[in-house]
Structures are given as structure tokens and as C-alpha cells.
Length: 326
Image (cartoon, rainbow, N blue to C red; front, side, top):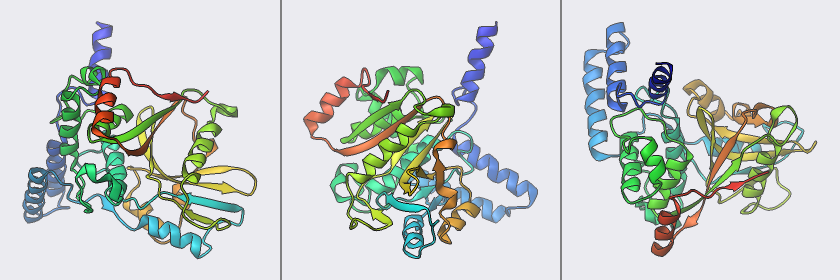
């Protein structure tokens, strides 16, 4: 009896209990806003029509997207809006922020971080395999669910597909780095999973994770050496830990030798995002002391695969190979 209750609790926690979907949750939230007088009936019908149109096209409607944050970060450094102790900062290629919307609050962070990553790849010409053709038409969350399922049907990550019942559409199921790895691999994008399976510093911290991120961004810098701001061509990194995921868009090195990640988080609200647009980088900073989960996993995009490499990756994904950092 106890085991059954625990199983049902886990199903509810991870959105596998059939309790709703992105569309159901979003429409329900709008109905509540109408009941509270926050939204008029006319606004409700217009918003619902826009939602259904977006879903039919499979393209995100942009309601939760914020552009211009990377430019604001760059401008902040150029205008010396940074602490005196900062030595240098390495920034990812242009990336849009996607925050949680009414339809995915509490479960959609993996999808939103995937949208952030795709928003960068869409701007990079050599990722034409994704079919963006230079545009910023990012798949909607339900469409991403379909695309992960399609990757499963092609044979990518059968064990992961089985654990989620082979179905994401019309559910609120969480996804993580392995589902994103499967989706990108099926599209011909080469990725790497890196495990930080235990703390590498005092007080349960992960300094080796920060050092790995620094090495990643430093290896493809296009700005002259000696500047505080070092622009790179690197896509951002997907960062997974228990219960949540975020996107790493940069890393700072301080004169005292300390490192600091710059993080886009789907849970960041409009007020926080406005602070960044106003050249305040502080809300993005995560020093080593704030990374105290027992384990972390990073997904890094490495390039584009040939058809033969994609097929080899499909076969290999029956058992995922990850790089483990001791």
C-alpha cells in the first residue's frame, strides 16, 4: 500500500498522472483571471484564439520570450557597470530568455531551457539542420513534446522513453538533459553530457563545474585578449540538477581567482528581467557557494553531425555515455 502511494505521488510530481496539459493549464489560468476581473472576456477569447493558432502552427507565440538581454549584458560591461574586482567575463552567443508561462508553471523548465538553447542555434548559420533558416521561429512547448516523442520512435533513448511511458503530448511530464540530448541528436546536432556526480569543493560545492564552464567558453573567444568582456561563438549550456534546470550564458573570473556563472532561469520574472535590461547583471550571478546540489549535469552542443554520425548516435543512445568529472 505504501509503495503504491509513493508511486502515485511520484506520478503527480512529474506530471505523469494524466491531470492535464499545457493547453489545459493555460486556459484554466486565463479563466481564473477572468473570474478575478484581471482579464476581460474579450481578452480571454483573443488570447485563447492566439494560443490555438500558435499550437496549430507549432511555433512559440513569443509571449514568454525576452530579447535583448545579451546586448544589455555586453553594454553593462562596456559602460563599466561591473564590480571593481571583476577581471574578465566570457559570454555566449546571442540567446533569448524564455520564462515559464501560465501553461507550464511548475513543470516546464526543461522545455524553456531548450527554447533558450534553440534561440541561440537559430542564429548560428551552421545549424541549418534544425530548419530555422535564419529565423527565430522556435517550436512551441507542445511541439517540443512531439519532437521528443519523434526522437524516441526513431530509436533514440528507448530506456528514457519507457520510463516516461513513451508519451509527452498532452501531459505535464518533466524532461531533462537526456530527453534534450535525444531531441537534438535526432535533428543531427552533436551534444555532450558531462556529469558532476559529487561535490569537488568544501561545504558541498562544485568548483570543478565552474572551471569546466570557464574552459568551455574560453576555447572559442572572438574578442581581443585583455578586455573585461570576451564575446564567444559558443552556444549556452544546459544545466540540470534535481528538480530544476537552468541555462548558463556566461562565466566571470574575478581578481581573487573566484569564478561566477551567469544564469538564465525560466523562473526569473519580468521585474528581474527588466533589471538586466537596465544593465544590472547582478541577478544573473551564481557564485560557487550557491551551487550546493549533490549532483549536476551539463549538456553542451558541439556541432553538426553527418547522417552516418546521427545513425551511430541513435544506436549508442541505448546506453548513454557521459563524461564524468571526478
